Length: 395
Image 1 (cartoon, rainbow, N blue to C red):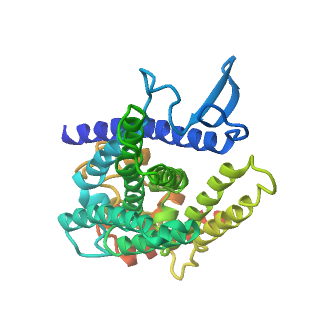
Image 2 (image 1 turned 30 degrees about the vertical axis):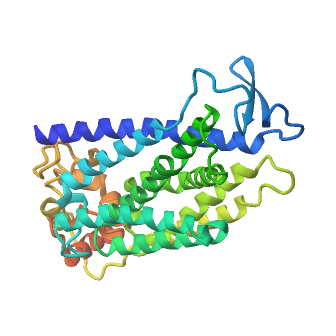
Image 3 (image 1 turned 30 degrees about the horizontal axis):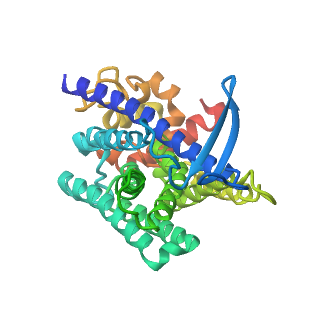
């Protein structure tokens, strides 16, 4: 029953996390688009810009004011719970998937010998430290130079990815980098953007005039959140692709794809401005190509000794069968991961490429090497794949 509840808790939280994330990122994209498309000529009555749009069978006229010209309306819409719900559901998902069943997905004995409590402390610590590093950088003189600030934060996250990979499993390292970036985004909302908006609302209601810097500071953090979105979305889905987090240089793969995400986001932010606008797509394509090339698995090994299907299945049954079975014996699993059941030799033949890729090329399976698959056993699987499956005439 505990495994069943864990499965459904993970599914429902993942669903909530996805829905809230769509709402938050959608609002971020829309307001950033709106800011970039405001018509700023001839502002009137306190306006700083306006925009006409057509959608859903009607016309919309949106206007932006530095301060409301005739007092606040009775209904003022805020955009904050999308961010808070995304973060709360994401942290709950982190606890259920990685901390509750930490021995399987959080740890990798071949990487480090730390225990579950230490791994959890490292994971949560990096999230907190990342916010302070970012916030201090933004408030320092570096915060006035966006290119330098971006380079500094990218370097921080690359170092963070490398350090986490020395302590946690590759999958857990990627997830914690994503959690750190997502936590920075929601802390921007909670600590900077919403407080600035509250000050503006109080001033509009007749309160004291706010610090004139709060508006630009909040806008800067909002734009940072906008650029964070695509790298964070990549990290959210990366757990399904061991070629990324399971690579020997996973931190470099992350850096290339994160930079590509930043370039793509920049293209969408500037594509309606005058002049050349498509140039960010060129470095994005080059960075994506470099990431794909770097993460490509090596060519199948040429076997020095033949290995039979029976020998290969003996390894798979011993090291993978506890999870990949119609009736998993591993704690925390009620169903075979991704529906891959390896209960007989015929099933191994059907899933041979996936078994070879995960256990030999990326070494991401077994997760955290929880069953203790040895290098000799991985070599045997490589020999079997090369001699039996890579050469159809020998099947």
